[in-house]
Image 1 (cartoon, rainbow, N blue to C red):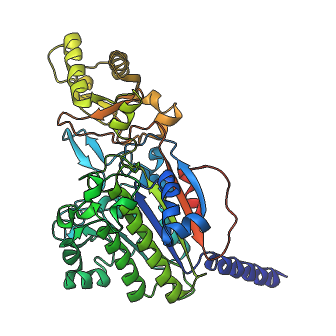
Image 2: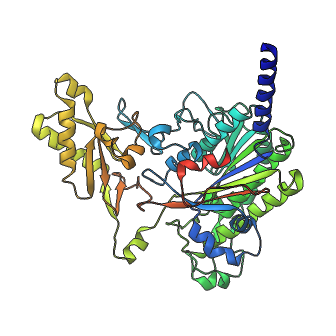
Image 3: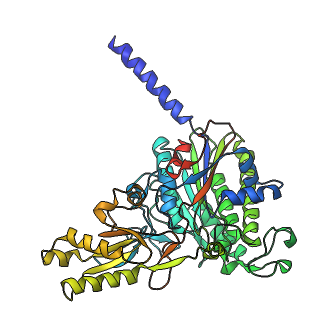
Length: 489
């Protein structure tokens, strides 16, 4: 009887494994697109006779994604979309974080234990605390192949996660594909061949001019008057010209061919970082013919990708997930037209005033180590040395910050985690001693007048589209950004 039970258990296990292996199509394409908005898709779709964005917007499951945490316009949104978790869990709260020991700001993805390939930067996803879409794919299909291709290194590494075969991005300075040794395959052979042929450098010699007659665009150009069109030197604006998206799609198809992705029963994955923002864009909203042209080119590039995959692996053997990434939100000029001017809050100045305040109370010492994002970092070593009560000082600083114009609320860090929106946005490892939140219409700045908070919208939303050759049941209504990864699994 025991043998029969073991036999049936073995059969059930094999069936479960078999169903898992056939659950995904042969090839999954995941594309994160900077600045992509539902409003722009709906506005421009009637003007496209054919193309990938038109096909996706007509045939794909489409809904709107909102974020359950603060959005700064950096890669915190990419990390949330890829992991299905909020920053308090995946650890990626902003592109940079404050290091108490050196009192300096460091890039979140910087990893000196790896080296760049064709690049001087050292990047890995080591600081990402949760598995990404690529990692989940690897756990389900250990023999599958996973590649990430993108425009910018940080975003591309987050797409690749911890377990991709390789990732590569466009180095705008060298005009070649670059990579990191964080992944086993380094620079893929397909990228090496394109570098050898000088493909990026070749496209960088082009001038970007309107793809259609300029009077057919719905918006004027940002660079010149509408009647005169526009012209950009691609070499000076490479990552914000349509040629960059074309290069990403070309390399994705080259990888599919050289690595034979999607040609056997084991599912594979390609993750892409693309862009809809033109050189002069200061908003995710379309306000110029250039941005319309970016959408036009992207529509045709994605259409070419789907056309080639139809021929190579079959219409029903792949799926595409496209999701927008809020980068600039609504620009200050648009806010001013509705009499809601955007005001700036200088975090470095706030830290300096806090230090002066504590000096007045406790003596001329360095009481504040620094500030970054929406955190003030106190000099804990000094407070401990003087045997002072840390919690009491945190409370004093929080009360002091509440008197600052633009501050809506301030907490000692241990209280901030009790409030969902703020708590979801913080990572215990990198959070300062006092956390504050600005009122609507205020933008975080540093002393060099560089914005930390590029998205001033209270609740930015982006579209997600999931297309498959086979119709699949999908959830209805707006979904949380943490649910995008689950659409694939």
